[in-house]
Length: 495
Image (spheres, rainbow, N blue to C red):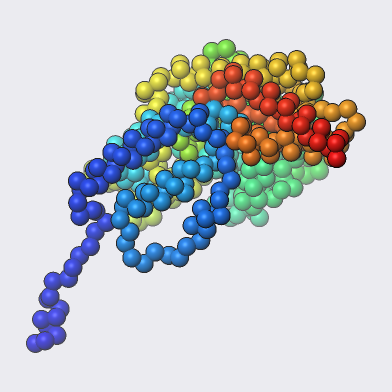
């Protein structure tokens, strides 16, 4: 009898919902107010700053066992996270190639999290919006409505999906069933020596190996050399390989160079190659009135990777891959287990979006993109692309007018490669000088640049992918680089 009573005693059930929604509402309003102040005042703060030791130590504390009041949790976030950002929403952040987010997109991320949908697919509103945003991306680059696509985390995954579809389309065997070892002639992919490192990761992940990816030399404008490509294709065929795919880059990471997409489309058609365009930097130049000519031919690609978190300034993370042949795309990834069979009506009466990529569990990335596109309209984003490219030219002109600075590579779009020059300093000494300038700009919180090496020459690199940047910020950058260069050289001379 005692055991039976114990089995039926009520058990306290718990939830993650708050006990007092009113308290949470008040705190949430405060958080939104703080967030607006944080973004609206970003120009008045340092771009980046080093974390004090006590802040760094806070990330080594033990797993929490007991509850902490939500207000205290937020207080810790405000102090230790918001105060020490990467800095990419700041108007003078020009390092790597990031995008600078937007507040409406951040609200979209919040609402997507509140709504909580899994975008693996199914018959619900978020899934339809996901497909609509993909359709809008097709329209932006000139792909037909019949093409397919999927939203992913960013450019690396978008490119890997494109390369995977190319592999399966060109292998000549059922790679999904038999594996890459069954491919009769080893496949060869081609890209310029300036292509992004994610393509190597992609080739390794796909089982093709790094050696299957041929790096083609670039011309004086740092674009893939077409004659060298044709020679490599002929050479590989004669050696028993199967040329399968050419990876065109619409905006290289180093300099923003854009391969000749029209010519590469012709080569790909003539040689029976898959044309994949890595457009994570430059594909969306297609929406820019003054500069869309630079990516003419992108609509002829078999697949395109692009990043809404760059020139659409969606909060991280938001990538997209588009594929002309929807059937080949789906055949590369689709699996129908017994627990995900479509039904005639109800929640499963719709396509499964996971059939077009690697993730079964997918976040609701579309809402933040959709909201900011609806709020601003595509024409405004096109003007922002033109604005950043014009700012790249403006900065290049400032550098060329300053005797102590020099351009190291041609400015193609919005990426400017330059360095401080000093008589008598070359090679490693000049690299050390420019690296110190870059680090002092960061330490002082003035600006964040990156550095790179272009054809053996080290340089500073400014990627102006920021809707908050003004020309006065670029003028300040030049002034500060010159000041720091003189200070460092002067101190070295005195020593």
